[in-house]
Image (tube, rainbow, N blue to C red; front, side, top):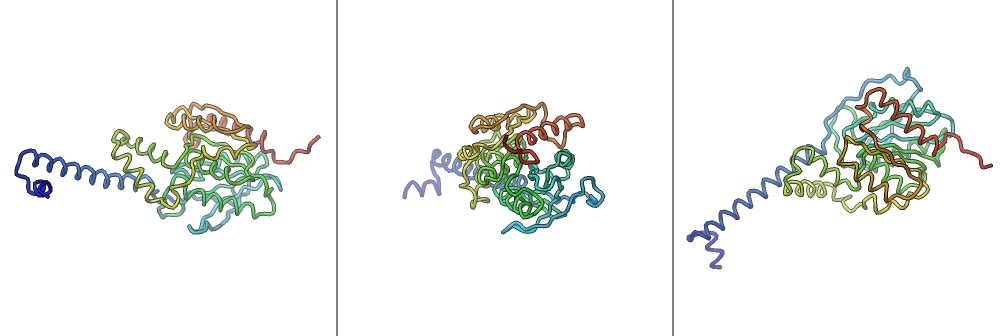
Amino acid sequence: MHLLSELRYPTRWYSKLIAALLAISFFIVMAAGIIACYVVYNIIVLPGQKSEEINLASFPGQPEAINYEVPGIGPRDGWFFPGLKSAPSILLCPGYRGSREELLPLATALQDHEYNVFLFDFDRHGDGAGYATFGYRELRELRAAVAVVAAREDVDRTRFGLWGTNMGGYTAMAFAESDPRVRAIAVESIYNRPQDMVHLVVSHNGLGSLPLLRHFAEGSFRLINVRDSYTPALATQVSRLGGVAKLFLEAADEPDLMQPTHDLFMQSPQPKEEAVLAHGNYAGMLDEEKRTYENRIVSFFLSNLPPEVRSRP
């Protein structure tokens, strides 16, 4: 009691020093917590983005607009590019702050080789703001997208391919680990857990050198997503992908994601391929780089998920 009283009303120099240090520590912790919440808010909230006006009726490939519902989340819409009847479908998963419009050339390249292709956005449509959970909620959105494609009568309902980068890559791989209909998957610059992406984005904002702030940001993110915070890391279930063709792409200009991508490649069962790109981010590539990238992706799917089922000799 005497110690508490002395700290409350310090009279000696050392008790005044202790009280001052406690006050400063409390202020630092509170400030770090407030700043971390603000940082996480800016990381996960996606500004409203008006979708690019595209006349699907006159667009090459005759894509079809499809409306569907994500259980517990709300309505979504996607673009279905028809390929060969009863061919497999490939879903393209946009990356963090990416959009389906950026993937139109890749979708066209795949459709030209008779694949059905589905383009959609993760919680980013119209003028309203959305938010990212780096794979937690996005997994439920991908499930709904696959379900609406699988409900069609003009596709192979038993064979799907997935492509994704960073957040989209994590989501694609998480879905593949839980659904045997996925026969081939190509992912670029992925991570093992959604918290890893939070850490990366915080670091890119110049705050990674502040350990207290980084831990607070990751803790705030887990609190916001408490429902999904115990989701297993990709590496713990990657053994389920035995027999699924996998292409891991590491981008030299995304050094923070090269090692996680390589680690998941090493832990994955066969069949698998690995390639290092000079530049990642398909949307930001120059035309020649885009064509090379598209050829690599198309060749991978043609080799491992052919449009027509090959008959055994």
